[in-house]
Image (cartoon, rainbow, N blue to C red; front, top):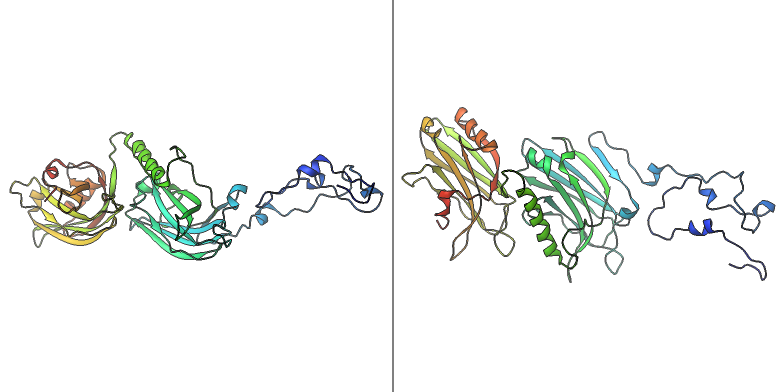
Length: 400
C-alpha cells in the first residue's frame, strides 16, 4: 500500500490476518487491540509498522450475551437457545413445544424466524416449516405450516399437533423441524433444520426455543442419490436399527380405542376413534384405511365388525362404535383383535398393522383390557401401537 510518492506504509502480518471477510457475526477476541494497533498523529502513532502502544487499553467489548441477542426467558416457559458461526448464516427459528400426557398429544407452536438465508433472485424467500418425528415414516407423520411470501423474517404463529404420543415416544423419538423455501417452478429448497430430542420436554410444561438453524444432517447414503432416495435410505436404516432390538416389531402407526363393558346391556362396547401416523401403502404416499375387529376365539365367525373406508389419509378419524353381547365372566377368556387395512379396488387389501387386547397381551394392551374388566360402565380410551405382525386368523380374511 502506498501513500505519497516515496512514502511506503507497511502492514504487519498480524493485522493482515485479522481481517475477517466471512459473513456472519465476529466473535469477540480477547486483547483485540494487539491485533489492530491504533495509529494516530504524533511520534507514538507514526506510519511505521511498530507494535501497538502499551498504554492503550483494549477495545471495549460487549458481553457475549448482548452480541447473541439473548432474551430474558418468561416465567411460564423455559428458553433454549444457542449460536454458532455456521448456523447464523441460515437464520434463527422460534417455537414452543408442549407434551400433554393426559391427552397423549404433542403441541408444536411455530412462532417466527429471523434472518433466513435468501433463496430467490429478489434476495428474499418463501419460507414454510415442516415437522417429522424420527424414527418413523416421514410421509405418515409430516406436519406443515403455511407459506409466507417474500420475507426473510416470517411470522407463522401456527399450532401443529401430534396425536397418540406416549411416554415411550418422549423417551426415544426426535422432532425434526425443517425450514424450506417454496418454489412453484421447481423443487422446494432446503434452508436449515433443528432436531429436538423429546426427552428434553417435561409433561404439561411448555418449553420455549429460539435456536439457530443448522445445515442438513448428512446421511450414510451416497451423495449422488436424489432427496427421495436419501429419505427412503434414512427410513430403512432406522427400521433396521429398531429391528435389532430384542423382540421389537416394526411400528405401523397408532390407533385410539375405547373399551367399556355395559352392565345394563350385558356386552362390550368397542369404540374405533381414530388412527395416527399410519404406514403409506399406495403409490401416492397415502392409504385408504379401514378397521376390522374380531372377538377371538370366534367359533361361529360372527364377531367381525368393520368401519367405513377413509380415502387418501394417514390420520383417519372414524368415531364408530361396535357392540359385542357377552357375559363379563366369558369376556375374560376372549381376545379382542383389531387390524387396520388399506382398501384396494380389484385386488386383495393390504395389511397396515394390528394389535390384540386380552389377558395374553403385553404392556399397554393387557392393562387396557384388564382395566375394562375391572371397571364396568367406565369408558376407557387408550392409544395402542400397530405392529407389522399379522394375526394368523386375519391372514385368510384380508379380502373381507
